[in-house]
Image 1 (cartoon, rainbow, N blue to C red):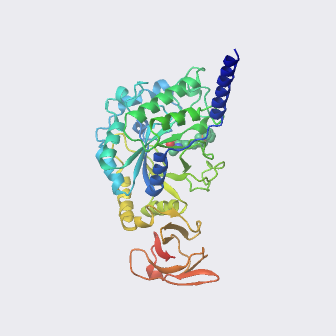
Image 2: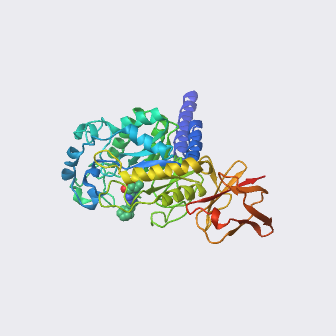
Image 3: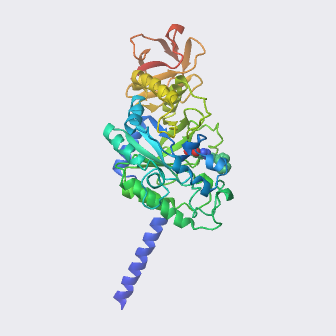
Length: 437
Ligand code: H79
């Protein structure tokens, strides 16, 4: 009897220990995850792709919500999606030639449409479009072939699924869904779709979540979903565009249309800059999904300076394109990526594998560092002489990166002053390579 009592007490204690430890779950990233974080921080530049049936309307990925298109009407769209000119090899080659090390593509955006052969819902590219092919699979295979990593953007917000309930700030009554639903069922569905993506598409570099901001107070079951992902692929990096400080279980922190610590968009008011690997994403024009009327393209200088600034802030730069409904990327964007690649081939050494600093960003530009090299990236010129503070290391030499042209400098109690004549200044990025000791 006494023995039985002891055994019972023991069981109860075990249950208590288990439940408390799960309440205080502390995520321990696996060794391969830590390795991938390091890889990610070295990679610095990726291609973001927003592609879905919305591209047919040429008015961005928010068209369903912006034009208040009911689910029943929006469901007519997939029938027009026939990307006959889609060529995975071409996209991956383009990304590589641009100097990009990974691709992040929309598996499912807010419209709820799956761009892969999902078995848990027929609202997908294979079942509902005349094209009928699994573009994510084609892209995953090609990425593997060409040695570039693939991440999936996955929207937690869903304007199509009836169980995404109660509704959030977007995708309201206009969708025509019944005023009831079970959010837990929706999350089961989302977990099932994520399981498909993490089991049928090779190594998944990362899952890039978006949409929690639609229902900030909902129980998103993050712990369960994040544990599921890491149990299927421990190395997969999880990030979420929730616009607040990272939650436990996440592996990188992202900043939408802003450098870490900035808030020009108004999205990042509650963001703090943490210690995880960082990434900033931005559009190549003003749209994520294909937008026929958007001709506000960035210039090569804009893109290069964004990459450089992101690196100076110790963040990656994820540059977006929105392919057209025929499966091609707009020629002006292809051309811009090619020009960016030319720059990366010449100056990438000062970006890839570096970390931000030693100085924080300045009006004139940023600094990156690797080993005993510090690179001053001067993005904006004021004078021919530039004084920067010392950071406790002795400067052995200074030269224009990629040349043998020395840069004259003096180091004294006021800091380090460098003299760069106008003839040596590059309007895109003048890179001064310092060798330090
Ligand atoms: O996928 C791209 C966009 O479709 C998605 N994220 C990028 C990467 C995105 N679009 N907008 N947002 C994320 C944040 C949107 C916030 C707003 Fe709102 C929606 C501002 C106004 C409507 C949140 C919801 C704040 C008010 C309502």
